[in-house]
Length: 443
Image (cartoon, rainbow, N blue to C red; front, side, top):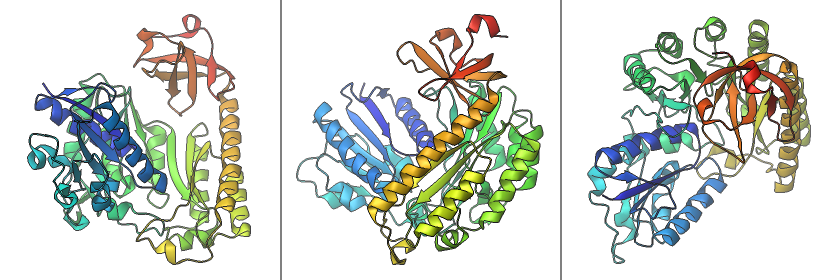
């Protein structure tokens, strides 16, 4: 029995696809093992959102060679689609599969025998033009984490100035609501308590074979009826696609939790226009206000990019102040990095690296302040927490429905269980401490 190991870089979407691909290996008789367990086959699923993701890929290949010099190394994912020839020249890489090929590993590679040294880099590449990536592959993670990531959409039709994802994943496409509900039902049979809906642009759900057939609102209404799943969480949704009817539905839903992650990218409408975003900051503000009006305890996460070409000191200050005034819970801060074949490369002036770093630092500090304030508002309240499986120095963590991360003494009986607890204090790691479980747990 050959052993196979997987390493995933990047987003929840990549995790859902890696898990699905791993199950195809197990169905073929492979034994799934850890990366350090000298596997015969290494599958590395890559990201290419930033330059650092590219560097990480090369580092992981080098590590795989140390662990097993005879191990077969296949690279898949976004970086593989964008730079297949470059990756094929990395020492130790045996195959590179693009967006249209990554779900055909067994068909295209076969025995997974290490390539002879004489094989040319070009012969290791299985990557067609991104326009060939038209099929949709339903994917979900299973047995990897307490929560399951369910892919509901792939690709993107939004050509944002800084982003390579449309080049790496192709155009927007989805499966049917019927098939995704079936996937959720299968997940429920595995005793999963929470499903996180993921995709590249999930609010654009419903495009099937190039035509809009369904929509995201109808999808969440259908998923809300799936028995056996206690929580659905929307991972990220564009503000122009987050409609009032979606917000109002989540507010009264049986299973969708009060948590939205809404990319902003900049609080300056001028910079938003440079980025080719499809909204102005006023619309974003309206969405946040609507959510907080009907769900005061809702957690709202925000993506922000700093240092985009053309972002002046004044526009960054405008963006910072806008975010500071929003009633949000935390930030994901990204420092702009130059990516080939993106329109941002044509925009001037370029922001110096030291300014990008300083702006990032300022927003990270602001994020911590926002998170602490959000947590403080809930101290003393009772919340239901889903506990995760990971153990760290005798402790474990879990999340409330509105995404407050709590800390508890490790107890295997709590894994994948939802318990009612009382939030008491915030520790130095920005985790919320709870009362002794025996005193406050309810079944």
